[in-house]
Length: 274
Image 1 (cartoon, rainbow, N blue to C red):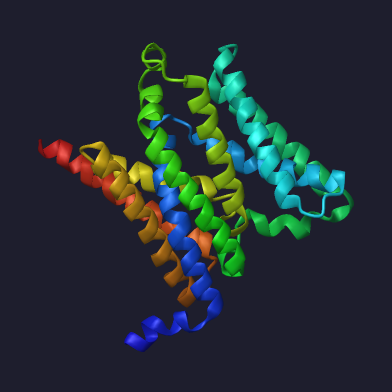
Image 2: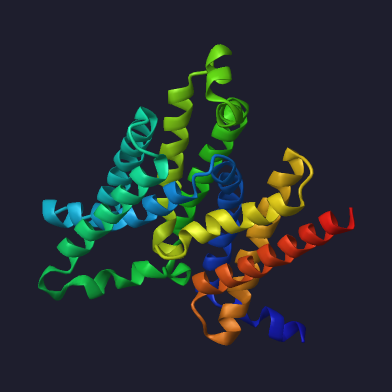
């Protein structure tokens, strides 16, 4: 039985995938809590969709590395969304939806020219099994930078999410905090898309945090359970995908969805009992 369970660890690509998931999922768990608190689910989804335009820009400019163009475009896209959202001319969800739709259309139009879209179709669901040790190292660096940002800026960012005016009165640089968080989210989303997939990356950001919110009684539990749920979904999803021959990303989302509905009905039952 133990041999059956450890069989998947005999392959180098599975070990690399496991290492990547152990790094990526805590990132998603931590980042997702603030995304859920700030009601930015549409924002992170739009960032994922903007990957198409970022790649298209790289193709048009003849860049040898479209990953760089994708990352730079996502950062600019995130800052622009923040800027327009703060003007109050239109509702945030409207602005995000318009820009998301536009970025998808432009990206797909450029990439599909000449029938070349098939070479980018893999980004829809991602492939964590293809990750290399060098890319794992990049993820580790981003993970450390995220931890530093969280330690230094979380209290200020949380204050901004609760009440922007009150945060300003406490001399917190509200716009700077919002822009830094937007850039951090853009970087993590773009770096992870290759292995997670455009279609499901937002689910991996939202589901663990939403599940944690269902059962947590304080902020400490909120962050703790979000990371636990995210890591469990990632590792168990990788394990199940190996033995069922199903794509890893969708399987992780299925596990995360099961956890969400379990915590939802658990919380609903607790409220009913009370």
